[in-house]
Image 1 (cartoon, rainbow, N blue to C red):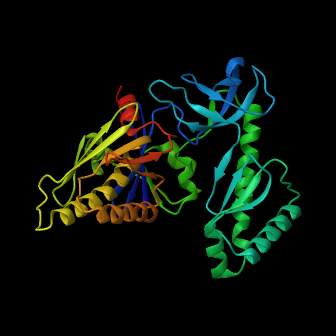
Image 2: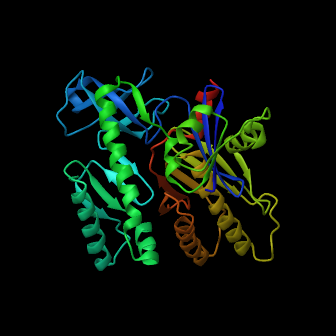
Image 3: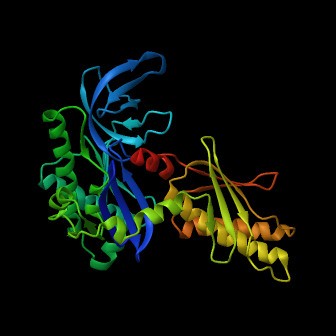
Length: 374
């Protein structure tokens, strides 16, 4: 993303990500807990039959928590949202905090220094661990409470500069942020949200545009943010309602004239591909293969934008040539990798339907849009 727009809308707040002025992500803060938010929670109930706790995180929600830590009812604890509330399920929280900054991730579920699994250079791993250990020792900071994980981009940056000094500021910011959260847990009341989904953008290299004074004041010294002050709203300027309403439509047209039909239910999401206005060539199988491939790329985009998760069943246009199915399968996996999608490809069933899955952490765009308009 090269731009993020944050603006108030009805009963909540919209956080919209753009790449070359094209909508790439939609977050809706409707004052329910969002995935990744950090709260000061109060333990209000222990359910012995399922060995789990219920934690009050705001005036609207009690969250579900499973933990190995020793806690008791009435206690204030720091929790982070793993899964958002859905139609009939409470949100799920964890007491393992994860802070994701540009170069390093801080996690409280382990201790020490970790390195991204994508980095295979043993010499680099030894050097970066030694540097961070030395830096922390000079600051009298131990790693008994958390783990610092080196992200892949650190390796790329190191190869450019052959120095690790660029990590110093990130390490300081991470530790100060985590320490600040712990202090807030001691002094602020339960039910306070101390990290929300707008603040993660301060750690990324993009322009933020907002018409909200409180957000601007909070972020102006931390990132590249611009205050929008005009009678013509950001909602109208970026055609937000038009774009979101399109994302809620069942039918999505493709450039070729074909379309996909998206049906979201509580159990699963089914997606049907239709050749529609696509002009067929002499070879129907080759034509259908092209439509199926084009549709796959659009499906991956739609799943991300609509926050579709769980089981996803795609009914591709039938092809008589079995070799084309193998080719399509290869291209599906390639598209998922190239588009950096978090969809998991499962495979074709005996009925010729293609199955995908996606981990559920957020409520769907459809549900959140209904809540904010409710």
